[in-house]
Length: 263
Image (cartoon, rainbow, N blue to C red):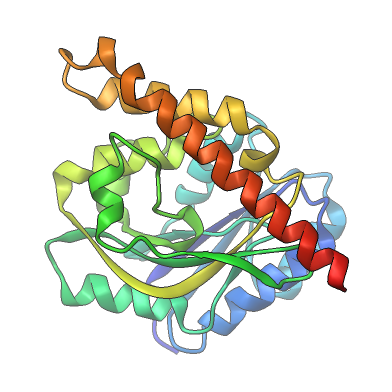
């Protein structure tokens, strides 16, 4: 097997063992065509989840218990010879060949710092509710509109991610958006519309359950990345974006309930 090239960081509290196994299995499949190191960051007392991670060959890393951003950064600190970073939640999945597709994009575009693909929104049973595949439009909207670059469908060059200091530990919801905005000065973003991951849409997902707080934090992040002269008037377009995001989330919830009702 080729030496590891992708560092996959998987933070978890260890309380979703059923979906965690599915996540780890989808990650193991990626290792068939991409060298991987899976850094699983979790509390020392999450014994069942730690055992599950060891079963799948993950590198077990203790959670510093300082929030999600600090947990991801602790996983990044486990880097050895890996070239790229990818993230996956403990209830999300990679699609077959997803990491290979993203890595090929970066290998073929040496001036690119980040690659991303489509992301399926899936319900608790794994059925696809909707698909996010904004393509080349997504980077243009980062500082002004919704963040359409899915964190679990993203691959970043590790040197550049470490150059920006990893993820801001003060952020709880929009740490990926903040990192994406910082990374723009290091290179371009490349994409594929093919789905490379699945994001679990259910009530206890961090950003789903805290929609308003997530929106407010995202707006604050985007504001600080704007030119100073535009910061005071950013509410003119951020409030409509917040409304549109809430409407889109409501439609996803309705679709998820409709699919569940048919089962």
